[in-house]
Length: 111
Image (cartoon, rainbow, N blue to C red):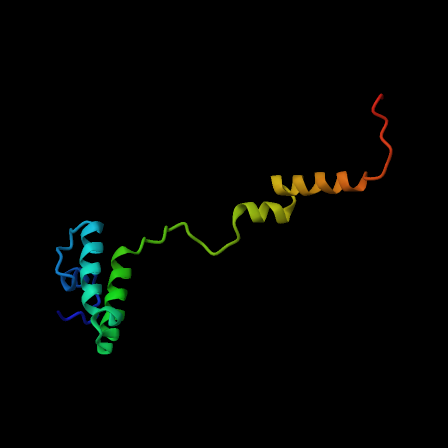
């Protein structure tokens, strides 16, 4: 089986012997069968290491989850709120700071 890398996902399916409409379970099963034949530890042939690397790349390309369009590398909103002092984490930190500032002071509990 020739598993040279090709530019399209459809070719990746063909390399695994699958139809492009195959479900994820079929892709996983075909990859596992191929991995048993190509893995250098199982096959005993060290020359299969490169083919196994290509098979891994094909598998990752087919099962990779698409990145959402709204994904960004900006800090998370909770982190941004904590830094600005307007989030619940900031309120917690302020409450703990206030509590710590009163440690050791006598409190009149009858008032």
